Each structure stands twice: as structure tokens, then as C-alpha cells.
Length: 175
Image 1 (cartoon, rainbow, N blue to C red):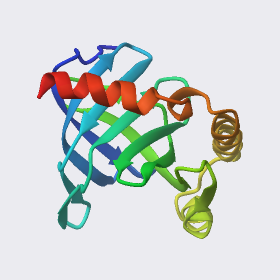
Image 2: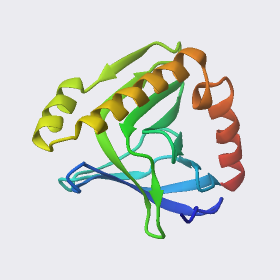
Image 3: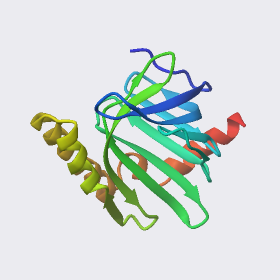
Image 4: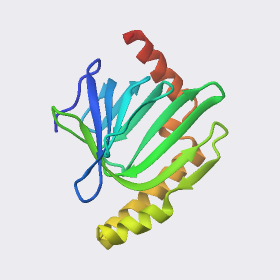
């Protein structure tokens, strides 16, 4: 697999299990790009929904994607601290067009004090039936959700102290 180079601006595309485009983040700056990890940053980037609606992100964010894990993590830098939005989704793939992954509905919202809320469980159950997620996929997604929650509890990966701040400082050197 090709990896995006640091300093390059890329588009991020999320899809649904049935192959339909779900959401596009227009421009994220690659801070680290390897075959297994992509760390990007954006601030006030345009997001396009599948129905064509557009909105602009409100704050700087550091995005973490891994080719092994079935989740990605967005650390949003706000006045009251770092808020995280975690998507349960397929490992990323990158081609020259964009970084791409499949969004599997389940999300975890993590607050600055590291408490969290699991979101969209009913949407996941609905899409699991509608799109016929195989049992093995359901098991993989639930195992990765458990792995993500362990990272939150143990403050590993992007939840480690200073992870987001350090990558944000690197992002500022490109501006």
C-alpha cells in the first residue's frame, strides 16, 4: 500500500458497508504517513455529507488512522480541553485519490476528563440487519470497540497525555 507523505494535503472519505459514500473531509494535512499509521490535522475544513449538505469544522483536530485497528480517532482541540470522537470503522486504505475507510456507525465520544459515551448503538443494529453484516464482522467490530475502550482507560495511543498537543505543534510548523 502507498502511504501519503508528510506535508501533503489529502481528502478523507468514509463509506458505508454497502459501498455508498458517507462523508468527505475536504483537506487534511498529513503529519505522519506510513503503511500502518496516518496522522493528519485539519482546522476549519469543509465536510460534505452523502446528501450533499456541507459544513465546516469548528476547531483544530488531529486525526489518527491505523491499518490494523477497526477504529479511527479524532482529537478536537477546544477551549475546555481535548474532546475525542472515535469511529468504529474498517482499517484505512490510501490510494492517490484519498484516505478511505468504512464507517460502521458505532461511535465513542470522549470528554477531556476521559469519561466517554457510546453513541449510535441502535443505528448500528439497524444497519447490521439492513446491510447483512456477517457474524465475523460483528465480532471484529465488538473486539475493536473493547480495544478502543482499553486505550481510553489506559490513556494509550492518541489518548496519551500530550499526544494531541505534540502533533498539533507539528501541524503549526506547516502553517
